[in-house]
Image 1 (cartoon, helix red, strand yellow):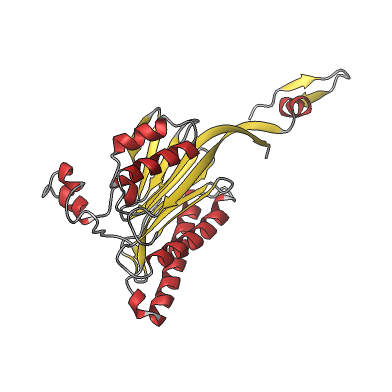
Image 2 (cartoon, one colour):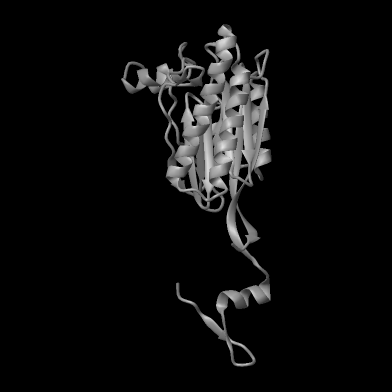
Length: 280
């Protein structure tokens, strides 16, 4: 790095960076995520969804307990606890992608072990499990992954892009051209997931994908309870027109509930904003 100096009144030279500190304080601008999350019960008797957001660690999770199976809520709670603990340790150390990948693997393994232990003493919990959407932001990079039909979206320059592909039976049928994309949303098998995390482990190990972020970019994590009720275009409209992540989350939840959401509804919205932080 080229160091630019500035001469002081006594003829000495100070590095430009130090001169800036003396005049302007020990802060600099950075983009950092700011988020909101919420989970509501919707049309179920029990809310088996969970969400997690930590702007200091820049970790964001949506977990959806598998409906119809005992222990779905417990599976979600276990997964939130183990993954948030594992990923926090990695992200606070400005981890590399392999380190974040390892933290994900360790968190999922720990969740599986805990669910398996419960299933041993409660055999009726043997099918407990959940789906997952996860994002870790490190610097100006986002790492994202998912299991099942929980989704991650990116909103950039006002345009929404779905970053994940549902791991469901109907998506496999669509990929094989056995049904059309328009049939996916209403197909009677649309909630049959082909991958999940549970007492029996995870069928297909997820891997982090990476993308660059800029100021104003937003990431949206959702359970299928939201995407059952709102189209991608409607999600885009509600979040882009909101003046904050909190407002965006509230609008998404309210829109789903107005349509008498049949499932629990959960989402996280995080936005990259410019803030002043302490110099390293």
